[in-house]
Structures are given as C-alpha cells and as structure tokens.
Amino acid sequence: MASIRPRRQVKILQRAGYLTPTKKTSNSHLRTWLSLTPSGRRALAKHLAELRRIADLTDSA
Image 1: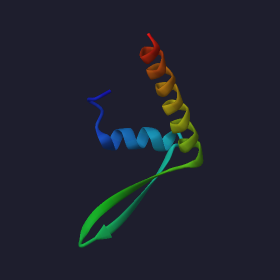
Image 2: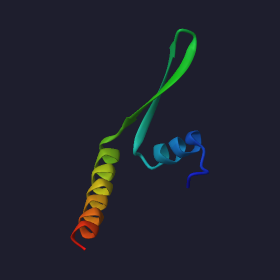
Image 3: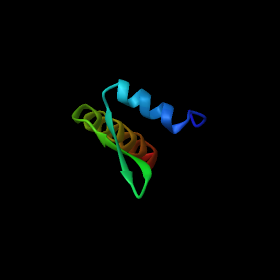
C-alpha cells in the first residue's frame, strides 16, 4: 500500500464516500483540502478503536 500515490488514494477514499476534496487557489498555487464525511469519521473511529484494542492485547501479554 505504501506504493499507492496520494492522488490515487484520495480518489479511492472519495469513491468510498469517506472524504470530500476541495480545491482552492492561494497565491496562484492550487491547494487541495480534504474533509472527512460523516461516514469517513465513523470508519476512522472504528479503525482507531480496533488499533487500540490490538495495542491493548500486546500490552497485557
């Protein structure tokens, strides 16, 4: 997964409904801002909870 280009990863997450990109010009440079959608926030929260659960298993071992 580390070889996936950021632009491609943004497209994948956008198609999944997890984020919304917004493009704005600042000092004649195009900037892209990424915002999590509500479903993206839920998916991130679930993912982080699972990572914490796994970390807790290794701490107690």
